[in-house]
Amino acid sequence: MRLSTPSCTVIVPGMATAWFVPVAGPTIAPLVLSSKDGGVIVGRHESSDIKLPPDADKISRNHAKLQVDESGARWTLTDLKSSWGTYLNGVRLTPLVDMPLSEGDLVRLTPWTFHFTLRGLPQRGMRTSDDGATLNTMVRALSPDRAQPAKSLGDDLLGLLLEGAAAIHGATDEKALADVILDAAVRGTGMTHAAVLKSIDNEGRIEIVAHRVQSMSGSDDAGGAVSFSRTLLATASTGVVAELGGAGAAPVSQSIVSMQISAALCVPLMLGQTPAAYLYLDSRGPRGAAPGHAGAAFGLRANASSFCLALGRIASLALANLKRIDIEKRQAMLEAELGAAAVAQKWILPARTGGNDRFKYVGQSVPGQYVGGDFFDVIPLSDGRLAVALGDVSGKGISASVLMTAAQGFLHASLAGHGDVARAVNQLNAFLHPRRQASKFITLWVGVFSPAPGGGATLSYVDAGHGHALLRHPDGTFSALASGDGLPVGVFDEASYTAETLDIPAGGLALILSDGIIEQFGIGTAAQQFEMTGVQQAVSAGHDDVVAALFEAVVAHAGTTQLADDATAVVVTW
Image 1: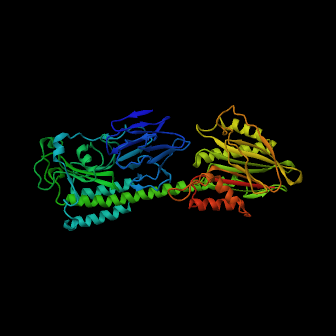
Image 2 (image 1 turned 135 degrees about the vertical axis):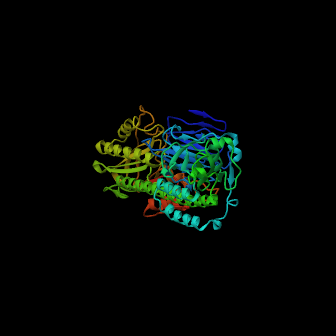
Image 3 (image 1 turned 30 degrees about the vertical axis):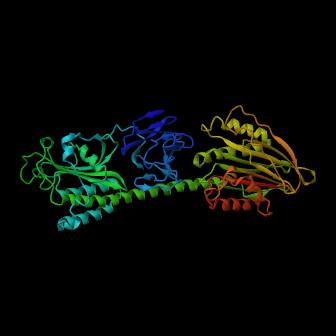
């Protein structure tokens, strides 16, 4: 799918399942998000799935990634170490940490703010009133230095502000917060019409979070016809208070009189640099209203602007705190789910050490994230044989771990049933191919060690596109136990795998690895990958626990225990 706009071209494969709808920033069409293996990359690089303008200010070449789970219902957002950051509801995301998205979230990729939605392009909400050029000339932006300082507020307004602050910070959700803000705003300004609004897009659609309309009798009425000034909202969207009229202001134009609006304020509620909502207030009513009715007053109450400016700042802090708590809850829930998955994944792996009378093994798998796409398995067979498998699923995270679990379980049952490596891999390929996601596959090394006279062994193995296995001979030299020329498992339904067989002498050592060890980069800008030379050095030092020594060497090379990719190693001795 290709979407052309005045400022960018978006190329997204597959079927759209979510949208980024712009609410602020340069003119841009909504961004259509589609499921894609590996996630959808947003940036200004030519290879990005969603390509923003190459001259976009404060946008990195590969800025962020969006990914949906297998259900198609839960999307996550990940900052890709962008220079300027990725913000979710005003909170800057930790780089390379997935964050779940919810309907209505505000995502800021400077200079744009997007509204995330699974409901399609906006059809809901109401449109703001098109005021025309006349109103535009009457609206002014009220900066903090032009507003009267809080210390000049009367005792009654100061008391109301303090009372409102306590109630605002006690609100437990956004709807309750909006109601408290409106109560304080109406009392402090005397306005007849008040609302808390959210922008749905950059074409004037808004969502009403809460509103108050004062009836002719003076009572509050949440119903009634409502309309809102597009010009006021557009001015406030820049982060300043927009004001129409005011104490001592000149009479308003005839067009505004026809709308029965005498004065208005629009206060942005900010999440960092992003307006997340708006406190909208105006006085409307017939010019001939009876004395004492709020509609009879044409102008803002003295100090109303300063009061609303202070109220907006307090409300912004409270809203930011609610959003922060929400993001912390999302992160905690995600970590709990991933932690449970990691425990289950460790449970299906074999014990770290084991074997039989003739063969001993040590194996270890460390996920690059909570859960990984690597696996190893060891299956004792009849006649003293030992089957060993190590696989690496393309990609990382939950989707890779699900495929890994299915592959390991099937392969284990197949090898335990007949012990024929070639037959087992062919059966696994036939099982996985029709079930895997597009672009998902497994590189696999699987072998069966059989006892041979004199303490040696015979090894029969299949290398399905893996290529990372070594034999260390008794004299300390190394030779490859894999070519990597075979096709990965799951790519073609008619792929055929055959086993290679060789005799190996007593006193040797077989080492099977995943690429997370070999391709781990070191520290510094000129750092190199660990590579097979690092592996050979680590296992040549005569350690009692070769696998532990290997991981210690990789961690020292990386300078951190958080490796870049899933890392697995299995050593077999006889």
